Each structure stands twice: as structure tokens, then as C-alpha cells.
Length: 347
Image 1: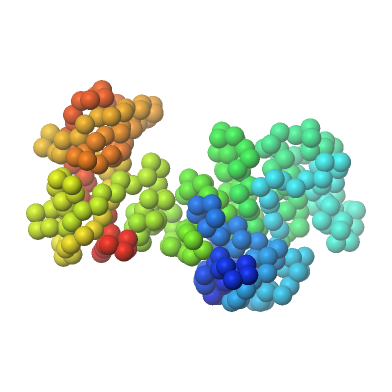
Image 2: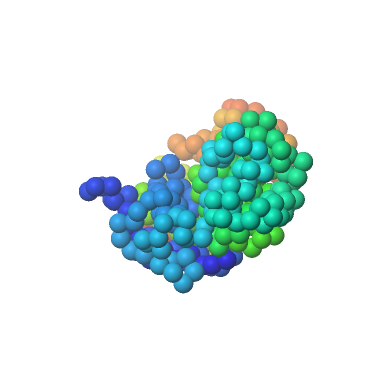
């Protein structure tokens, strides 16, 4: 196992910069998720750690070595790809042991490591099959097995669950996290799915436009987003954002006045954020017209019109209101988020 450190890492394709001075310190044994929209640079950054992309500036360290100029095979990493990258003509056992065979390991060592990995991943009864005889989840386990037999210092995962159906993604999420807890290997995991990031990571790195927007524990990012991008990217359904003005009487947004937490010294143009689950039914609340009611079983999600704003609320109780009816809402003032004109958090 080893720490991974990125110091002022940049990447350009010709004259076009795609990564702008990335600084991330990943502790030994930590599970870090790089998350962001398509094109934000997260997969490029992962491939640079792996040595599959050259870096344009800065330094990447794995353990106590700067690996900028090392070939991927010399970095002591193992990577799991989105498309599994299995050899279709080889058995599961041969696929899992191929990298060890390529490195000159003995047949006895290969067999021992493959059996060990297969036991961990529930593949012991599938070792004689070929990839074409496996389900998507089983193929992903084989790809993970091929990585762990090498006993690397660092695991790299590049959107490994994106080809799986929703139910299987949930199962595999738990399996990957459980594998990390069992092996304790430093892991860097790339996804565009913020639910994956929230449920799996020790820390999340939120990226946008080739820059790091915020780094922190999942609930830290959820509870105290550094800016508007993080606020709306983390959380499902996403945070309600209303643009308006902070005044002595409250937050005024297109004719609607929302209450402010005590002690707000700022004034002027700003954005008001409140997560859907932090809106409460209250007789003395603000009138909002129901547009859509979506019962989810354990909760009810409601789309509403508040003044000229479309907002979403989530209630634990089973709301009986129908579209067109008016209900009254108040925000939990302890959970209100305010952002200045540049999108940065106030307070």
C-alpha cells in the first residue's frame, strides 16, 4: 500500500489545457472518489496516475517515488476498466492469472493467488468458464480479481459499474467497498455518479472544467458545499437554488421573501439554497402550488411552484395533496445555504 500525491499536475493537448494545476494528497489505504460531469478531466487524471497518459506539468508520487516518467508496469498499480478488458478466449482463471504469468511468476504461485482472489470474490465455481459465459456482474468480479492477484500498492477504478443495470450497480458498489475494507489498499475511483461517490468514498474530489472544486468527506460536501457547483452536483434530488437579494427583512427572490438564519451580515445579490428534505410543512409557511406528486414508498417527492420558482420538496410522510393544490412550506433555517455573486459560499 502507498499514498498517492499529485502536486500542481497539469495536462494539455497541444495548446488546449484540460487540467489546471491539480493538488490532491491521498493517504495510504484511503478510498478516494473523483467525481464530476462528463469532460471534467477525472478519467484523464486517473490515466495519468496509471501512466497511460503523459503529464504536462507538476509531479505524481506513488509512495516515496515520483512516477512521472515510469512505465505503467513499473508503478505497482492495478486498474479496473469500464469495459472489463477480459480476453474472451481465456478461462476465468487464466484471465485472472495472466498478469502474474507475464511477470514470470511460478504456476504454483499463480494458482495460489487466483484461488485466493476467487474465494474473496465468489468466483471459485467459475474458474473454468470463459467471459462469454458470465453475467455482467461476474465479468466485473473477474476484472477485479485480475487486479487484486497482483497485490498492488494502488487500485485504480475507471467507471467500473457504468455498464451494469441499476440493481446490479448497487450490489457491486457494496462489493467494491467491502473489498477495500478487507484489503486496505489505497484506491482511486472515478465516476460521474454522485450517489456512487457518496456511498463509497472516504473522501470525494469534486472536479469541474479540469479543476478541483472541493475535497472532503461525503457528508462534509453535502452539508457544507464550498460553492454553487458542488451544492447542485452533490445530492439527489439536487439542492433548490433561488437567485435574489439579501435584505434586512429576509431573502427576496422574484417577489417571494424567504427567512434567513440569524447572524447573516452579508447583503446584496446572492443565491439561496435549501435541500428538498429540509423544507417543512407549516401552516404559517410560504404558499407553494403543487405541480407533481411522486410517491417513492418511504418518502414523497413533490415538485412545486413557489412564486416564479420551480422547487422540489421531499417529505417522509405520505402527502395527499394533488396537482393544483396549495401547501405551505418553511425552510429549516439551520440547513439554509447562501452563496455570493461569484457562487462561493457565504459563511
